[in-house]
Length: 527
Image (cartoon, rainbow, N blue to C red; front, side, top):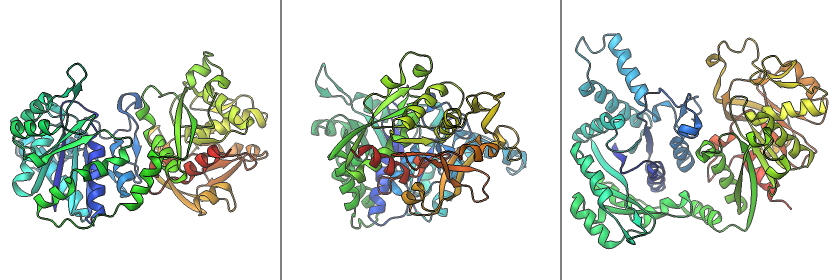
């Protein structure tokens, strides 16, 4: 088993996750088994309690793990389903160490970072690789070299290299200042020196830059960073992250790594991927859809939705432009719903928590329903559709969710009694099955009557109101196998009006788009 450790330098947000995902894709295309891992240095056990504005999207796995959104990239690129061990965090590692210490498993010695914390980290990553029967384990170290949060993890990887086949790839920034008009190497030099001070000599340097790396810059970096010239890799900008595998392939990075490991280079097969990427960058049609939410200040809050639209668009040869609609502006009267949705072909109301912006979301749902505009409601958007319909078509003008209005006289959305205790106990996390109504629109889109999607919520459709809501046009076209939970809704006579309590965006991939997103984009693109 071989290990590749991907570190980052100069600043965060350079795309270590995309590099890791792209390399995994290139190795898989050559026939190798891979296991991606993302280490996050924060002391949270997982990402579940983090505000999307601060951290970006909370990605959810089949096993219910709430994790970093880079694991979404791993799944979208590789098709491999991740689980809790693929995302060790500082919190998980320390929790593991402290639990062992309390049980006396360290045999009474004083527990220290070295060898105990670093030892648990090494065991963690090797266990992930062994369980996946991986040929190559790719380990992305979150944050930037020099951060105290990841120093102990890098130390563990340094130790791992003493006993295993390990290569270090350092992703760093090579900026081009307009005032001088040339690529500057000093940030990379200083970042590599910081890594060297930690006892690690990078084997490859991947240079994030606007344009392909200049040959003189390669020469300078090779000299000052003590790295072979052909191991200085240009990781320059491209139109889509799904082109990055081809950027790295143009640098022969995968073959160079395999050569270092003494492994065969195999035969690359990426034809389907190449055709889909071609559709992404050369679409035949362009449309605009609205995303109506309250976390629009940070687009990473909705990255899986954005990617799911791109995946569907690639198969339909349609480029989907996004219009961000801040629903608090509608709620507080700063903009009308008509003006907010001007120019869009359809709208998505995504997931969320709390009461802020909900009346603006409900206004958007009403507009889409009354104007035959394609609508896709995800999780909270599903609940908003139920509330809007109950208010305006079922004679329940004060209908609401108990999350928003605890004393509402018509709690059409609530926590179902007997299905959980405190707030944490009522959260439905991970993959759940749903039985779809035969002949329904959602069943036709999925091509199956039994489907599984990921969830992240705690409020549900109140069973006491199901019959009254379904007395009109809106139908619950998917339910949990025991019939307790409403999972999908639709209005059959509408051009496209579908909601789901789940998050289908978490299972979408370029080669296999989420069915609901495919149907939504198809409806929006239909003149």
